[in-house]
Length: 85
Image (tube, rainbow, N blue to C red; front, top):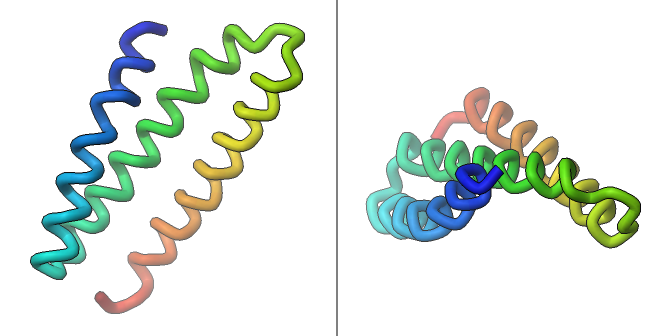
């Protein structure tokens, strides 16, 4: 569980760096890589949080929020392949 939390934390600067490169270059590939990094970080953060949630309603709310974020992000990511960049 520690590695997935560490991955989620390490993904933040990677996401920001890819976002900056995508904004400056206008590259669709870099934008998609950025989306994949943030989606994998959300999934990596949700797993240990769900495992330790127990009876805490706040933690379960956070797990639900992360799950919704992952699903919406995945749908938007897949839809971006059908649009012309």
